[in-house]
Length: 149
Length: 307
Image (cartoon, rainbow over the protein chains, first blue to last red):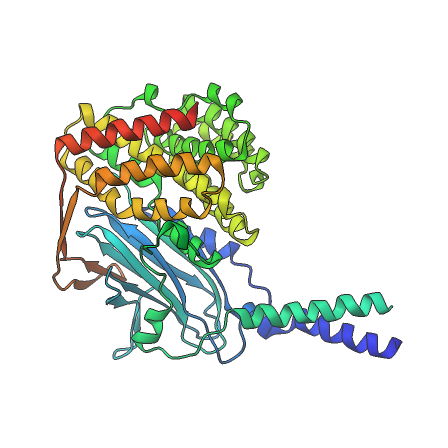
């Protein structure tokens, strides 16, 4: 009985320490990310822990929405662990759920760390975040809006 | 030992359950990505309200933050109106969780307004009141009040003060989501939204501005979701009364017209970022009479909430 329990505790230990399931501490990303939105004011942050909460091969697309107001410029940033060449992709959709643009241009391979959106049409906008690699990733995104001059 | 094993199996089960609860297929076609998008204004009859926990928080997260309105009010050149914000001396009257949460939202909006105008003298007392209400609701841990009060004592710390306080509210909301305390989130959100509406309608009375007028009219887009969120908790008598008032406010907003003309956006690269210029245009047709009605109703609802 003791042997079985030792094995099970070892399995549990592996679950807690395996690199692929490593804890994602997004807090450092949050503060670093905030420093990249200089001329914008912080509104919200979105955390991603796909290394922790998903099965391999099944990355999740995280979806959110926010009412953008005409006359304001909004910023969406992606701050994440890219040490393994992983890409975090931000996509923006309009009120009709039509894709406006994505931070990743597949044709050119260009990845933008930040999307800015100068809004002239008030409405609910949708945005998604996903990682290019199947195993997902760890990071945060910040939504900000333009400051007064 | 058997007890330990039961805990262990439970732990392993929870690990696997957490993993599977978020499953979705990997396909980056737009259709599949679009399926992950939150659902827009869900129109339900009162007796049919059934919103999942996830969907409710998706709606909560979509509501515009009061700090945007405060920034816009300052941008149009309106002066600071101290008499408009909820006095901290009222806090002693808030004995129910409903009143505490609604007024935590109201004071949060007030703090944003105070900070935007750099009225550091008022910030400390509002921070203290927010701290007390947040502690009463067991969400005070997301605010480092010592740091916030230190920042509030110096006018040069505006950005840090705004960031840390906004981040605190943001983290609190995430915590309430995990803790399944959506009612507190909804009450706070409604308080903050209503306070922003109250301030903008009051200030519009003496500061003519098309931007401000449009921002008031734009709330037509949000009020449906405010109503929907409150409907979830309408068994609470406090919420039922508030919901009745919000429905009257919505009836006024039903007369406001919003038209949208779609045009393709343009995109350029700017300082390493992708800059998207929206070319779609919305026109908000709202009359002075409608604004006056909204002002009156918002003021009545707010008076009831802060009493």
